[in-house]
Image (cartoon, rainbow, N blue to C red):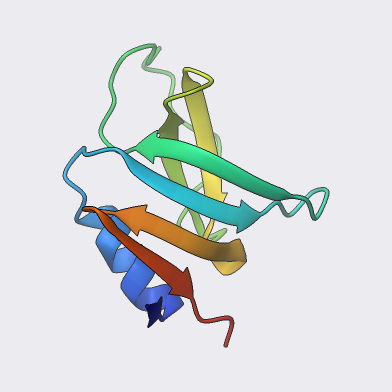
Length: 93
């Protein structure tokens, strides 16, 4: 099923810490990346915080379940989302 980028962003933010799958195009290299991620992970947090605002750069900070580290998902590069046992294709408009 196709959904808008805005709807995909809303689903990610409403995931309530559940693991979801995402596919996106990396900004730096243009390669396609697949990731199992979740929001709300507090492990490995140093308390230092970020040096920039992810929202201003259209990014979502998540915890990569496979690499066991924090990563950023570029919302403008989303292509697919798998959440709550449903798979979505992101409309590129």
